[in-house]
Each structure stands twice: as C-alpha cells, then as structure tokens.
Image (cartoon, rainbow, N blue to C red; front, side, top):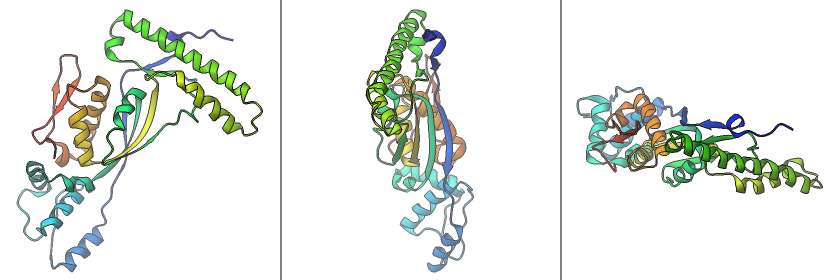
Length: 267
C-alpha cells in the first residue's frame, strides 16, 4: 500500500466557486390579464431580468401605481424602493446557486441565514470523504511554518478517517444492505474530519436575503473565507440584476480581499 503523503495527496482549496444555476421566468400573459382586469390599459417596464420585473410588479401592486409610473424605468423604481426601505418587495426575486470549494466552517455560518434561504448540502453520511480536499485559510497558507503545521494536522485527521472507515466496514460486514453498511461506517468516521473539509451546497435565496447576507458577510468584520464568498455572490448579482444590486461598492482591504458596502443597508 502506498504511503499517504499530505503534501502530495491532499488537494488544498483557497477560493470558493459560485455557480448561478437557476433564475425565474415571468408569466407575461397573466400579468397582462391582471392589468386588464383592473382597467390598466398599458404598462411596460424596461428590464428583461425576471427578478427585477417581478419586484417592480410587487411594489406597484401595493399602491396600484401601474397607470402612472414615474420616469426612469425599472432602475429608478427599484432605487426608490431601496431608498425608502420597502424591502418586502425584494423577497419575490429568487435565484439558485451551487457553492463549492468552501469549508464546513463556512457552511456552519452560512446556514444561520434562514429567512429567505433554502439549502441542500452534501451529505458526509453517504459521500466518501477519502478523496482529500480541504480549504486552507489564507493567514495560514501565507506562512510556511503555519502551513506545514496545518497540513500535518489535516493529514492526520484524513488518515484517521480512512482507517476508521476501513475498520468500521469490517465491523458491519454482516449487514446485508451495502448502502447502509457504508453509511454506518462513514457517519461514525466523519467525527474526526476537521472543519476545513471541503463541501458543496445548493442554495436558493431571494434578493432581500442575498442583500442581508452580503451586508453581514461582505463586511470587513466578517470571517475572511465567507467574505470572499459574499463578494463573489455580489459580483455575479451585479451582472445578473444590476437594478437590485448596483448600489453596492467594493472596497479593497489591506489583506488583498474586498469589502462590500452600501448606503442602503437593512432594506
């Protein structure tokens, strides 16, 4: 059997990856039917982004202001929403993401964001973690001495996991259900895996919830790894829905990372 070498056999991840995998569509026919039923002859908006359009429709329903829209189109309308803090209408705009290259430490913080979020995370009970992938904090990676210490510790944990799985599979060898046998072994062995273990999570969130996440986790006071994730999400959403996220500014920090700021906080 080959000797396990952490420097060779462990994949180290330094940056999260964000995939925007889903967005809404607009049922234009039913919006037109609603307008016709309420004696609105014509109403148009100048955005093709479904989340922006639906947020505007939601806001206009509150005041039935379709017939006399203010100048400036969807951008001006949503800017006014942000200025006055009418955040409930932003809850109707929803996107779907997959986050990878993130640690279990990060997702322990991420899933505290409950209102407006939905999560489906990789299961360590079913998925084999013997392929070693771990997220190393920058402050450790940037110093050879702390990097070596971290790599040694992670390597020991990883070896223990692999050995425990092997021994537990033997312990449960009389269990006829192969899937259950593996689950029983992995769910016990995972107890030695560190918070640095890489994970994957599917996330659904509305734009109000995303703004709250970006404001809290994009702050310079947030933990570095989750701040990187928040900034990546912001960059994507500024391209995806600029009328909902263009008020944010990215500020460079001394450590080379970025902070997200906005004048329209807690909308």
